[in-house]
Length: 449
Image (cartoon, rainbow, N blue to C red):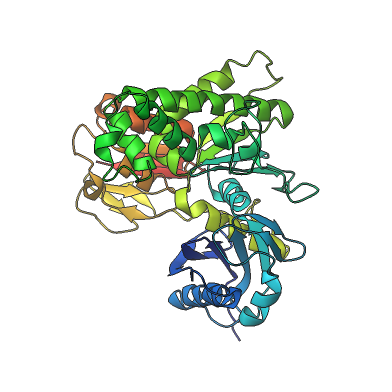
């Protein structure tokens, strides 16, 4: 009699925010099978929010046809201060969940183990599992958005501290007596270099009479200066925005020096909306400051890298947290990828998994296949734009193989070149890139123009 096939072991990571609940159903190896999103109930009692979280989890399991017994554990990510051991939310902004023992309330609704973590800690955990820190034994995450959050990964886990307050990088004091922070202190990193701080400094300079394209990019004077506006202003080389963001980058660089001197991590991962939009301007300045550190180490390391996971970092980290909660180690030996067989036939045609695509093709770092033409790539002298690169490089490949007649036929914008550099992806352009891709043993991606 044939041995029955073992049930899949699946894990759900949940990012609970003030406006939405996002859940991802994942395999042990890190594949995302499904995503579901529901609006976070606003102004409702805690029970309504807890029910919405449970509904999102059930919906994501159902959308991937997860059978009985396949869902092994759930990881919840909450912004604010949490007590994972007690399963309690100590304090969280923009949601009526402060003081709630959320794990005790969730487990009967789901009948699986539930674990709890801080959102930025989960983002760092996600980058360690499947992102830009995946090959590092130690990492610090810095996420720049409305505020600045951080996480510290050491010795196989997130370092939480004696009071669950480790990794509050945004509240490093970078200027004694500096601007007041939302936490009540003065001179915090967040009060000087977050998007909120940039917004404040740009508006103050405009009020003093400086000119800026920002006034035309905003629909209303009261609109927030969001990351997209900053990106467009940089593209037009707006002097005021460049000055403000350059000062913020310098502060980021010196914050990294403090982190290196205190923890000395292998990588410092920058993520968040500001970095995703403006990292190509900010990160070279950060890297230059870090590399100028006169206190050198015994070995190379301390790299500045950009998040590879973007908005998925938190849910992926929450799923990793769920694995740890049931005694699994997501960081060693489980995150393998099955790549399709890609080869050239005797007639010179490209063949992917036994099928012949119509000319151009790409294979992503997590093994998906697509057509680069749909993402703006051009045949012949292949132009790799950031849209194509972000798609092809999902799954955080170590190397990107591009098949062209000669290496000079690959054209990269400065922004695309920055993306490859700060994700530490080796670009290999060659006439035999398909063969090189097939032989490469590590994480990889391929573009055939």
